[in-house]
Amino acid sequence: MTGTICLWFDGTAEEAARFYARTFPDSAVTGVHRAPGDYPAGKQGQVLTVEFTVVGIPCLGLNGGPAFKHSEAFSFQILTADQAETDRYWNAIVGNGGAESACGWCKDRWGLSWQITPRVLMEAVSGSDQAVAKRVFDAMMTMKKIDVAAIEAARRGPQRA
Image (cartoon, rainbow, N blue to C red; front, side):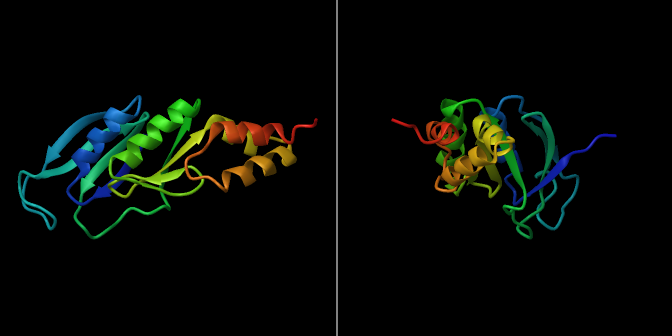
């Protein structure tokens, strides 16, 4: 059995898929399919669906029209190794007409939400040391884009003289 995430777009599925393919590793556009006839949101011959992968996750972009919008209830989480990688993905999304949010979340120009999450953050908040998790969580709550150095400092805790 296989599965695919279907993402609804208002005529921009191919543009979005090509952006994701350029931006993220293990991502590609694998098929563009045109409508065999007119449909409520378009005409025969227009791009109806786009098959693509985002970081290895199979997706189908459907140009279904303006009826439905993306929401923060769905997001892609991209785990990053360091600040440079965090900055690269964050800046690509926000710099291409997207918007910053809080706690490592941003939204792309098509309305999809992304969590650009350094591994050090996930390791610290999911670790067994609750004091470390709380310090790191509190630090994260003050951020938009995650600052890896600040997360690592919170993980270490207060320095004694």
